[in-house]
Length: 236
Image (cartoon, rainbow, N blue to C red):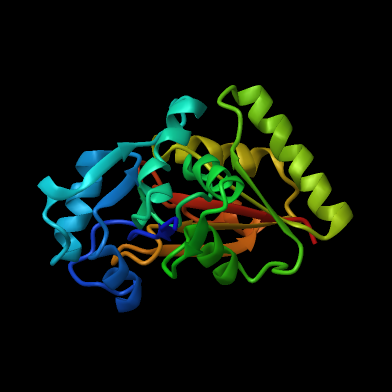
C-alpha cells in the first residue's frame, strides 16, 4: 500500500517563536524521513527550528526546483509507492503554490497516491485578507516580466481586467526589485485604483498598506528592498 504525500507549509521568515504553524502540522513533519525540498540547507535550518525531527542523517532529501526534469521528479515518488510517507517543504509558506512542488503533486495524484495539504501560512492569502479588496474574485499572477516596458504593459493589462471584471489582482517580485515595481505601479495605474503592499507578513517587521494610488503618491514610500512583499491592485 502506498504511503501519503504531505504538503507542509514553512514559516515566512525567521521568527524566534512559532506563531504560524499548528502543532499538528509539526507533529507530522517530525515523523517523516523522506522530504522533497527546494534547498537542502534552508530545509535543514527549518528542521532545526522545528526540533525533535528525525535525525538529519536518516532523512532522504530529494532536491526539487524549477529546473528538475520531469523524469527525475517522478522518481521521487518511488519511496511513497513503496509505502513510506513523505513531505514536500516550500522555501517559504505553502508548498505547490508559486512553488515547484506542483508538478510532484500532480504526478502523485496520477499515481494514485494520497495527497494531504497541512495547515500553515500563505503570504498570498494573508495579503488578500489584509487588503480589504474583493476576496470572491481574485487571481494570482506570480512574477511579472523583468523587462520594464513589458512589466508596465502587464500592470496596465491587470488594472484594466480588475476594473472590467471586479477582480483583485495579486502578484509578486524578487525582493531586490520591489522598489522598482512599486514605482512602476504608481506611474502606470490610475489614481483611483487601489494598491496594497504586504511586506514581511507574520514577521516582527510586518508592514501592510492599502490605499488609493493617489494617496500612495502623496505619502512617503516604504523601503521594500530585499523584503518579501505581495502586491495587490484593485480597480473598483
